[in-house]
Amino acid sequence: METPDLILSNANFITVDDSDTIVQAVAVTAGLISAVGNASEIEALAGPGTEVVDLGGRTVVPGFIDAHSHISIGASYIGKADLQTPPVGNTLTVKDVMAKLHDVVQANGTAPGDYVFAWGYYPESMSDGGSITAGMLDEEFPEHRVMIVNVSGHGGIVNSMVLNDAGYADGVADPEGGSIGRYPGTGKPNGVLWEQAWMPLLANLPDYGRAEFEAMLATYASWGMTTVQDGAASMEQIGKIRGFAQEATLPIDVRSLVTYTDLDPAIDSGMVDSTVGGHTLQGVKLIVDGSPQGRTAFMTTEYRQGGPGEQEHWHGLANMDQELTDEVVEKAYRHGFQVFAHVNGDAAIDRLVASHRAALGAGASPTAPTVPIHSQVMRLEQLDDYVAAGMEPSMFTVHTYLFGDTHLKNFGQERAFGISPMRSALDRGLRPSNHSDYPITPINPLLLLWSSVSRTSIGGVVMGEHERVSPLEGLRALTINAAHEHRCAGDRGSIEVGKLADLAVLDANPLQVSTDAIKDIGIVRTYKRGSLVYQGASGH
Figure 1: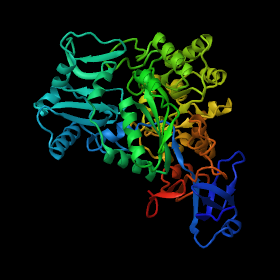
Figure 2: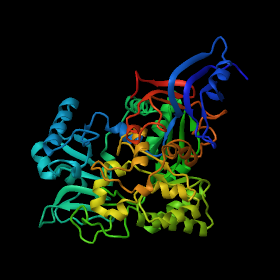
Figure 3: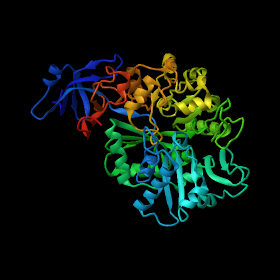
Figure 4: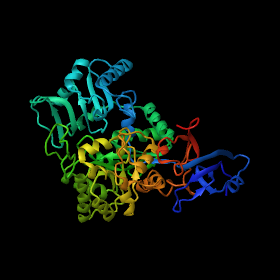
């Protein structure tokens, strides 16, 4: 073999190969893993030009793969008001919200008439209830358009200028699949919008440039991420990222999903499955329903607290009806697009499974596993539907931590304790991945890993002990399982000869520390194709 360019030694390499082998050292040649084994045999391969790094007993895992997140949205949020609540942020009151909005107006020099943006708003976790209306925003910002994005991304609050722009006048009807909040006893919109009442306004989100995009990639790399998904992008955004990749190879790989509304131009582009400079057009993203914490996930059972607009006998909202879901799935299958579908509620999952069966009946079949994204408030027999359909779910276990207490109020213990049922999926032979859905929740893969093992809410409630997994199973969900879902397990996701030298160096071993300590593990280094793309002093 050729003399290695790099040798990483004196560490615990958790390979997550088929035998879950642990080795002491790895050699890297031309960006690929060229040898694995004990320290002495690998170090003996070094030549005069080989860089040999003694990792001092650290732990090394395959570079993390964020199976579902939103780089384009995250990049557009840079420099905007961050309203995340503890333990992620520090927003506790409406007064805090208004202060942060004023701060970004001053910092950005926002001109009258322009938009003031905020994100991460989660009133259920605010000490004063977080109630905000268009009228309150009008008083604070009479000369600006204001748009506050709910932490779910599926709704938010706007002021009267934005309501007027959208045509949401007194007495306007709710759009199909959407909810417009009203002032009590009136038909006048109060600025609170959900799903199809909200989605059209997302076109007003701020644009981003190369600097913001590179800052996002650097943040992902600082968390040991070496492959990430841009989970719902327009063809314009995909073209932008492809342009960045053509100018210079991206420091970590980005796999884009085109939003289903842009599937036709994506087909015409001929870009599907093409890779340039680390950027791949992976497939198509369906958004079948909404958010469980926002009470818009599409359910077969009623929400215990009613709807977000005080609706009674509420089952959530569907962004796509059965006919449209059928149409998009069949078209994607016929044109070789892998289908990724946002399905939070069990009724939405039923809709996706029915569309898969309808496509098969029409003679269209998938070329890759269809991925139900989130798969949260589901019935366990739906996992059997996944097995029968060859689907592989991407789960969202950090919900049990950040939103678990809200889910208990919305769904009751039986349903809430079954959210993101990773243990049950594994027991059926499925290979579920796990994801951050950033900027909905933090990128931190160790927090994701801990949440799959602990399933403990902020309030200290164990959200279904029967769905806990082992640390190794949780790690596989963030590495090799994610690679399988993304059809790239042949070159990443595990530490094996011939695969990309995508590696994350940790400051502790997640298989050996206590469960509670997993979430506090730091990232020391991140290697992409054997190149150092992040180095911290002693952890993140």
